[in-house]
Image 1 (cartoon, rainbow, N blue to C red):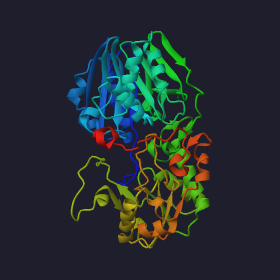
Image 2 (tube, helix red, strand yellow):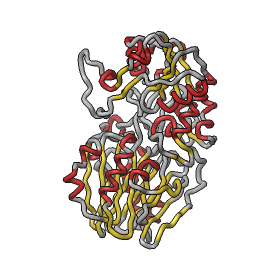
Image 3 (cartoon, one colour):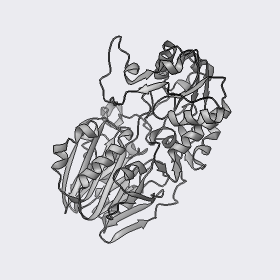
Image 4 (cartoon, rainbow, N blue to C red):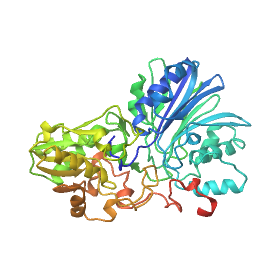
Length: 474
């Protein structure tokens, strides 16, 4: 992912394990979360199911910090596990909001992990509170857990309860639910967020947000979970339920291909790496530049930079180096210390006296772009022509991308030439919005943050911290 502080933040990552006989499920979940760390760096958790007994560990921090060797060793072999790595798009980042959420209720235990954002969460929570529901977190995931628990009291099976519960949800959800005997995964009917599953050589099933996590534990991908589809894993096998399929238009989030996903993942049959190469190629045709070298902002700008170089004939080079030992949780410096320079460094040998095409995935506020441009100028760059693999951000996202207001979007207040001047580049070119379907070869995409065409009703309250406000402020 890009290192920029004013960038859009990552989505969450979910991971599940189902085996007929006990396996090192916690260890598998650990490596799965490691592969999904780019999707969330605030907190993480693992819950394993040891013959109906749930064991869990979760905390704020990176996977490597939350799960030292002694913690992993404390988990027993188990037949099931559900795990989560989080970036908060609804609710704060404190320990109370760490997932998976665990529930003890009349019909047994349940653990739930969620990737996405429920756009009608405020209405659902208010209705539940009026019936006496008490919430212990400020995330929308607890609303889902409460709905499933409520439906479970009226349903013959946990999968029926999940199906009935999600019928009232609007927005994005890729869920993994673990009960005492079953592992269930379901994807919202729009298919906003990715979800796939595979199988290891010993027959263990793995469910994950991205195929890169399947490969991390030696699983061979089988396929993506279809939009609206539910898969139920039990000792009787795998059952696919499709009562929610086709109930809403498919709208895969285009920003998964531009930014969120790891480049070695394949989402809905499309290689993320190939999509980013195409983005660079499109930019080269739409916004050519007379330059000496093409460089990308690590990490998500690199593939597109290669594509731009191939299409334009301008050589590709490494002009920026990322500090690999700093995550988003590091302490930002104060005073004269430059946080961007701690995370990124310019390669002077590459950029000195050169006319540069600089490729990045997006511009949100523009402050970090300005820092990077200034760094390249200080390293001797003669000209900087910035090209962006996304169109200008003009609208909030209600499905998991952390933009809940137009207030901080630079493109809402300034023209492209004005933005170029603000960030200090010689020229600036964005990916044309009508070229977005070409990245993944499908028109079934959600590009609402660029064009304002929302697939669901716009929520009444879009604040990320809406459940943490005083009642008088709601």
